[in-house]
Length: 307
Image (cartoon, one colour):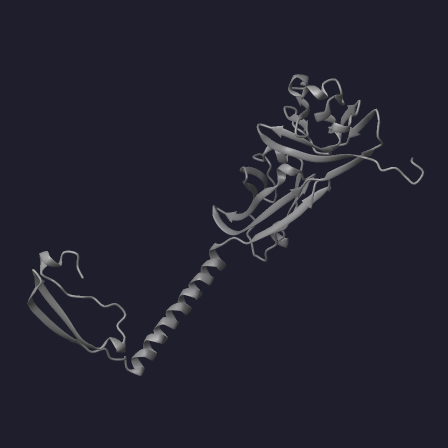
């Protein structure tokens, strides 16, 4: 009933989803001070729809569902971008971001590879029959390569050399002409870090935690070695002993010019039992992690003769 029945004078009752069993007589009674002042009786007759009407309604619903499904499929085919996934480990020479399509393309078609997540970057561009790398981000300089004559072969795959932790993310390749998109592909790349295992005998005087890379590292990057404590920091072209935990001061060294040589290995001297465990080396630039490497330092088990 309406919430304002006494004001409007409309005391009608709405019964949802009537059934055959609802058929019968319904009585509405008005009272005042427990005395009946009026009574109204209404007869309700619920009938079934003719079989033909039921069939037509069923066919109409089925047709609408089919049309909706076809529309959704058409939208997915024409307006969504296919997604590929590639996973590699750090240390491989290169990784290929695949994209092949059978299209008849004009000569003035442009192919653009960009990184859209976690941070946008211009990765590679092909236009006017050749590579156009003027707008390429510095991080990808001298690291990208496309197949020859991609517009003829339909192979728009991109090779990325020396993949590192920071390369992980979503890449999108857009093939367009005069800003009209002809085809696109998203490739999600995941570069997994490698855990090195270093074993030393008990009471060893020193050990080197290895980390070498062929990649070109930015000169303003920061290198951090840590466990649950800060072990060593290289920043602004020199070591930062004031930032490391006091228990490691005077016991850690890195080679000269590590960012230029790519040798980020750390030498740890005067070993103690507390030094064994997992060490993580990160190379950062502007809070972005470029490289990441784990090294497990553990005691070498003795042989049968105690050696």
